[in-house]
Image (cartoon, rainbow over all chains, first blue to last red):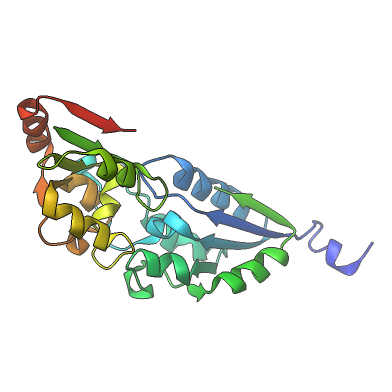
Length: 129
Length: 99
């Protein structure tokens, strides 16, 4: 068995979650977040990408009191406690929406589309939401 | 006529289709993910600024707030609450929802 296959009795794979949907109009964003949290328990090598309307998931200042929905955006800040620390955002998606890194509620690495492409090629598993 | 748009202009073409077919003087109301059309500085801002010449443009404030963009909405857009939403529907002869 190869060295990378076994660590603490399990296989470590590189998981990439691709988030492309705005947070409240559909349930995709919340579902993705829940899968990420569940997956975190399996101690895999997890990365998250936010692109297209997915960048709105981590936009600062969300206040859902008026729409009577759960504001789940603070949970993104808790991800680092689950060792989910690799958060990437596509620059082109931010630009098209008039947003910058300062508008985001968690520390991220802003990447170009080309860098995201390379990141995707580097994964074992890609889950798209 | 009241046109209601509830889809993100970055993901769907509801806004473009509406603007192509809505008659002058109509009212546009953005709700749910449609409110992202109000973002100042976005790739859709010029489209919306243009639309404001011909239409009354409204946005549902609680949906802006939920998405964290209340401070980033363009000037010239009328913000309405749920009661204002009801008023718009009640005073409009026809309502077109761009689902």
